Amino acid sequence: MTNNWTPPDGLGYSSLRPVQLTGAGIALLVVAAMMLLGAVAAGIGLGTTARRQAKDQRLLQEQGVNTDAQITRVWRSTGKDQQHLVSYRFTVQESEYVARKGVPPRIWQTLRAGSSLLVRFLPSNPKVNHPIGWDDTPMPNWVPSLVSGELAVIAVVLAMLLRKQVRLLTEGRPAPGIVTGWRRTKGGTVLRYEFVLLNGATAKGRGKSRRPPAIGSPICVLYDPENPRRNAPYPLCLVKLTKSLNTP
Image (cartoon, rainbow, N blue to C red; front, side, top):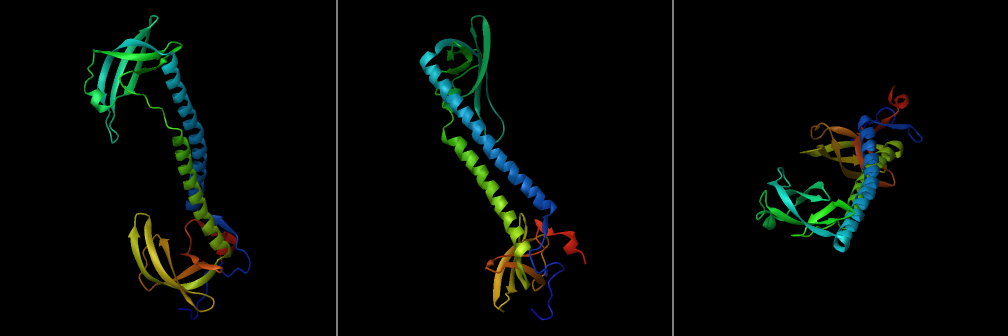
């Protein structure tokens, strides 16, 4: 596997190789940035919503006034997350207010359009209201942190994937390899391969490839000299050599 083997153009560069992002790398970087911004926005937006809902519920309990509303519609939403809904209207000081609320299924079955519904509203802002037949549970305080944290974790994972490929192409050592197997996945093809380290030892690795090569095909593998377990088949999908080094 090592006889007369030479690395592809540019990989023999003696010092750190200048690299740049591919189109896929740029797209991944944009997605990571959007996820990070989304994490911040979700934390702020959902946190504000949770605090407002908790405040509205407290004010309804302390200052709310009951009134009779008229049900205008009872229906179920379509789609995966089917909801049981009711809309109603009521009048406060000659002004009419319309609202729509989710209803527990057992109560929803008893509601009829045109019938009355006891509603509690806030006199200072009647838009804050809720039927008293079931609880209005505000968003839990942990939800904003959970959503924001999940988006932030995705952003970090994407950034680490990009950083890994940048480091491999910048500092990685090229080695001759051979394909030992592959399998198709939703994201492409996962290769299994073996490659020869500088000391002559054989190491194994796995990596993605757009096209499934024949088993036994020779490939070039980049690996971290300090940790050969960090390796990938060349060329990489997210980064590439600058044109000055990649062009003969």
